Image 1 (cartoon, helix red, strand yellow):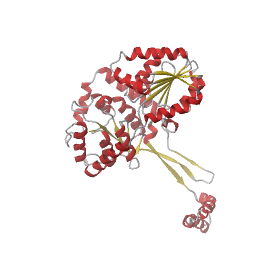
Image 2: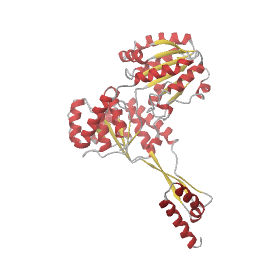
Image 3: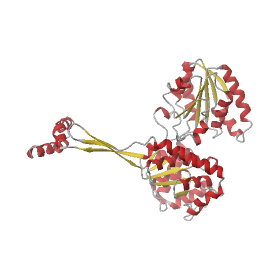
Length: 435
């Protein structure tokens, strides 16, 4: 990790280089994923069994594809009281936050007596991908399934990679608390295919959400249209805006926390303080050596970590708005003032006590966030992503007689005489009836 001096004129070119470095040649991956999707679509369960053995070295069959209710119920005994309490607390806080975001169906009458509005209904069946291996975390399930439950989705289906040592009991316990009864031991692109297209054992879903590796992300991209998806997520990232008032040890700890995800994670600090930059670099080197995942941290920071020394706080804010980070931490003297100038960020953490790690688990908002600069046009996953709007229109006789002529004129302008006739017929009927 290095300190790099940056002027306002070099902000965008620097960010373009960062984003280009994050891009991968997807052509080979896309071909592999397309083959997997097609295989599952054509051969269903049989393809799942073979692919599971090929990629996960797990002997999957019709008897163990779906996790039994006994195994789900037994998970409570396999985790500590502290872990259970933490999971319950996280679910409660996420529920409380998401409930405040939920809109309601609404109808109103206009001046012609027409009834207009919208009906809100939940997406019935949702597939949730929960990563396995070193990224097998109950928080991934909390931050997705809880939102769907708040929205009113009835059927939640979990797919998570199998393991010869057994599934993470914390994930099973979380599913049990959320009332999830369908958990399938499948991972990778084949899991996305099964959720999207269905098999003999798995009923297809209407939306697929949840983080995953590049194969999962590519598969989600390819099945979009058959089902809805949450987003195409890339490697995780944090950007810290810090001035001379920031505590170097706090900033260092947060950058390291991000870097320990994996070697592709990005941990960046922008500051206008030379003193902070130097102290931060020293603090990172000290702290990183003490952690179990120090090898991953070291590689991540070397590849994707930087401390950019800017001429002003204004330039730091400009960098952030162009970068559009997944996570943005603001550790400045006037935190609220800086926050008001932020227009592109997935999740904002304001003030020195607001480390991004607390948002991963317990703060309330979902940690499923737009990455790779997509915060410019998209938002964090929320309960709103699990509902649908149906517009509602009930036209009165006065309404069709008063507004119909305008609709007819527009239809004729577009040479759609059938449209015009459909409307004039109703107006004529109203005239015949003396209306």
